[in-house]
Length: 253
View 1 (cartoon, rainbow, N blue to C red):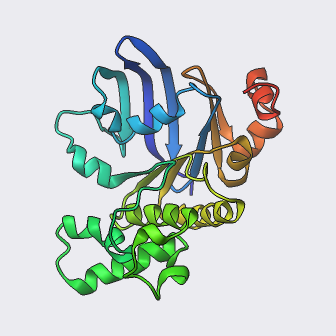
View 2: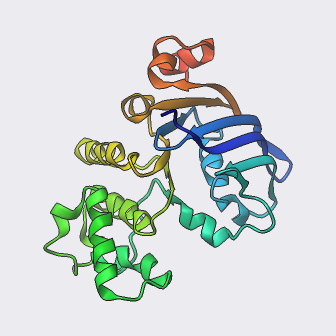
């Protein structure tokens, strides 16, 4: 069965005040695949991720033109609930931000806010989310200890579990391994391969090599423009744009 687009972006222009930081971007993101969006500094990758769950709404003077469709519906339409959108499209940032509470309460926080009443239901969701984030086996015997005692890599996987507990449809990851050691990075990359069976994933990787390891498709951005998009192996082995090849091989960036 041919994968269907989960997100369609059409003629996206994004501005901070009068500065254009994404220009005329068109992109389709397929369901249950991992798309890695990469490029040098100031290429617009983080901004692109933030437009997909409207985090850019929080920036004074920011505005966009064009459309971002989630399951065919424009997420910037007037009748869209931004709170519900951010539940459906969760985001994990580069610096882990556990809440100052226990491991269990970190993951249970979102489901409880969304009116999940029974304790048994919350316990089930917490365990499932921690298993999907490949963290359960490491913390199952100390769920009531403070989350801030976890290592950096464990904290990042906890933040992924916190997003998963809200049962999103899309997960956005902005350089989730940028400050992590190689072992933690491998664990997160392994978890992504499992997660794509259930979710659509868009990641801004912390380097080109990670894009090559984890992504089904890649999109290369430069100065706010989408230069090339395609199947990872094809783009890496035979890029159609010289700038893509130069960046992948380290000639610039």
